[in-house]
Image (tube, rainbow, N blue to C red; front, top):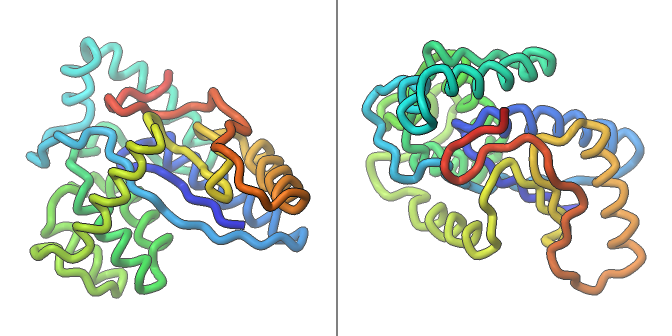
Length: 232
C-alpha cells in the first residue's frame, strides 16, 4: 500500500502524527501488511523569512498575543510529551522550510528520506536550530551522509511541483495521510485510528481496484493549517 504524508517540519502536530503513524505501520507490518511511505512537502508559512526569529514571537504577533501563542503551544507540547517527543518552543526558530523540503527530497533519493525528516523535526523542535538556514541544513546533510547542493538548485523544481500538487489537491492543513491516492486521513490521529485506516483501505482496495475520488476516512484530528495556526 502506498501512503503519501503531507507535512511541514515546523508543524508540531506533523511531528506527532508521523511518530504515531510509524508505530501504526509497525503493527500493520507485524500482521503481514506491506506499506510504502512517501513524504510530501507542505509549507505552513511559505512567505516566512529565515531571520532567526523565535517561533513564540512570530506566533504571538500572528495569532493575537503571547498568551494565545503560549496556549497554542502548551497543549501540543503536553501531547508530544505523552508520545515521547520533546518540543522546546522557548528556543525553536521560525523558518522558511522550502530548503528543508529540498533536503528531505534529496535524502529520499538516496534512501535516507525518513532519517532526514526526523532529523529536521529534532533540529527545529528540540535543538533550536534554524532549519531555514542553508548553512545549518548543509551541515545536517553532511551528518546524515546525504549529498545535497543546497546553494544550487538541487531538488528545487521537484519540491515546487509537489507543493503545487498539494494545492491542487486542496490540502490546507497538515499532517494529511493519503492512502493509495484515494483515501485521506487528516490530522494527528491516534495510533489505533491510523492502524484501522491502513486495514480498511487494504480491504477496500483489495475488493475493488477501480479508482475512486479522494474520500475522507477520518477527519478532525489535531493539525496545523495553512496560516500556521495549530489546534489548541
